Image (cartoon, rainbow, N blue to C red):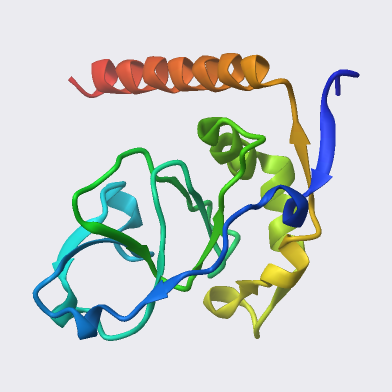
Length: 174
């Protein structure tokens, strides 16, 4: 890695302070729910508090969500939009909020093979679909911190590359 990159432990860069809400106590309130079952759509579920049965974490634009359940599946979600609704996430997500990171860079780092291998190597559970990444262990992982402009350049390059791949895939299916 370049000399101008720093590395810090995740717990040292994560400024997220756990804040929970019990949506059932606000039955008429509309929420944007970031849940594991809806992840494949990359859109939060808009649902009323009366339809949500348990307490949830309050999240906001710029937060990066790292899925604890079945960490061999690559599920990382960047909250990219503000909302007029209360934004919440299930407890199956580790919420990362870092003033040291451009959120897309952090999302792509959490998606990287190096990080995925590390995350999948230290799990609890009986195996298969019952494994969980342990937040107490994850918070001890080192995270790279390139200069902010470099993070933006890297993120833009990765996103452009994936757009090109999407375009190629679309042309191949037509």
